[in-house]
Length: 400
Ligand SMILES: Nc1ncnc2c1ncn2[C@@H]1O[C@H](COP(=O)(O)OP(=O)(O)OP(=O)(O)O)[C@@H](O)[C@H]1O
Ligand SMILES: [Mg+2]
View (cartoon, rainbow, N blue to C red):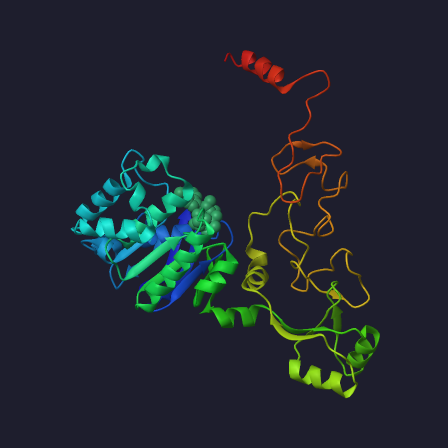
């Protein structure tokens, strides 16, 4: 069990972690969520004694990390996959860790096998890819067979097989009664893995709740319907007091209603239904709804941003047809701002918002809209010049 009590960390005038109080319990996977800079890694570092709290307390099974004599046997952690001695082989890296905690040598072979790195055990880790480094970090966390495991964004860089594997690993460890605390920005993955959620924003606790309660409290439920008799359907539903929202793909959504009751109402009026499905918003939508106010770092450009409200954002009836720009998000302002383009059409060219500075700080040239989600192409060199010549000029000035 991990217990935080009023845990606070300030760096100068920046409060990275602000009076956090919560408990991470055994037997479940607890997801640790928050926008960039929310304080997740800082919290995890304080847990391992890598940073000292400004005030408050954090304990592992009732003790401070420094009080654990062979800590790898109590808590295994992956905070930064690159924080290893690149000149050591994977095997030797793990062997050093094992020897420092009186863990038998055979565990090194076992965990290398578990994470799928046996074949490269004798290779130096500096040549490892990001995903291989993550696997080695996970092997280190498992080495002491600890009751508590903590992972900071463990799926970064893992391939689909690796993501599937770590999901099952974390669920399996929790099912054995261990405490599993994991941060991630991959909401779809968290939705499949975590049972409980701790959400923070700007260092403060925003939610400490089960996954299902979190989604229920922070998102809307609605019923999705599809009918070939669209006009009569809208008429019948409106008369019954329902607000019908067009999704833009030929379907309708009716919020906060019962699918069975809507189906019966349609049957009474002999309306044919091709679809009748109760829906609940995703963890991603619920997370964005809750944390919209506490997002500190907004992307400057609009490139690659999804239509407000995400794919399939409903369009109030009469406000749009398929292919029309999405309506305002039902969840309030998107932290990524409105989309400047129509889904599926790529980025517009020469529109306001696409000129000026691109995502990489390159001045955008007219006609260089590029693809949604892709970084802009570098600008064309000024007429009569090529960039190499300009660089050579500048290097001469700097005495290179
Ligand atoms: N050593 C440090 N010195 C100064 N400021 C720091 C230090 N470490 C973290 N911070 C600041 O503390 C805040 C929280 O950072 P932290 O890395 O904990 O966030 P995070 O939730 O892990 O973010 P991300 O999702 O991007 O990993 C940030 O504003 C960061 O700049
Ligand atoms: Mg972090």
